Length: 210
Image (cartoon, rainbow, N blue to C red; front, side, top):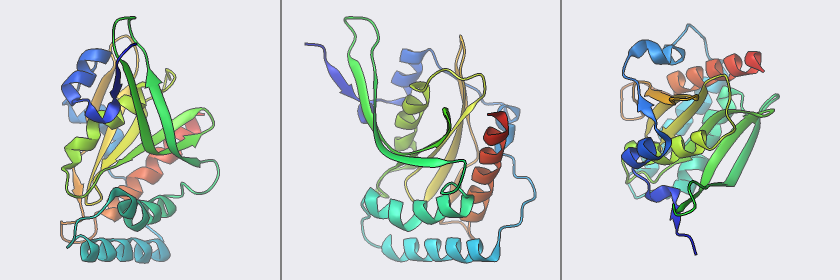
């Protein structure tokens, strides 16, 4: 019987090796993560302010990732417009990849997948607040790489509830990926405004590309 390796056990180095994946450090590679002027609606600002305040209150104790999704991700996706057409959020989807006959099968369950027709818009991998956001990156890359090959880039968001990191993946003969800057609820102000704005801009870009 072939070995099954949970995606959550993969390191980023293992993902890079198995998929011949190359990290790009040039800031221009992920130009989509550069903020463009966009004014959030007052209702959305209030929603995100409440989400940050609730998180900071609850984060004084250890938080399970299901609580993180309720407190932070749900209002964030709502403010970004991902609960409305043309997007459809899907939760708890199993992803499985097979390589050579003697290689283990990679299997995992993603937390939230936002779809636009057959195009993946963003994968959101929630991790417990006790873990660094880096722990969510290998799984997020794995899920993005497991999607059908697309001519357009794929985008992901890795978060542990307090920190947020966008990922961009360009598929092809030599897959490449890059990061945005790190956003955090521990910063002054409310970085959820910027995260929501980038999500909206990515959603608009992908919707036009379909």
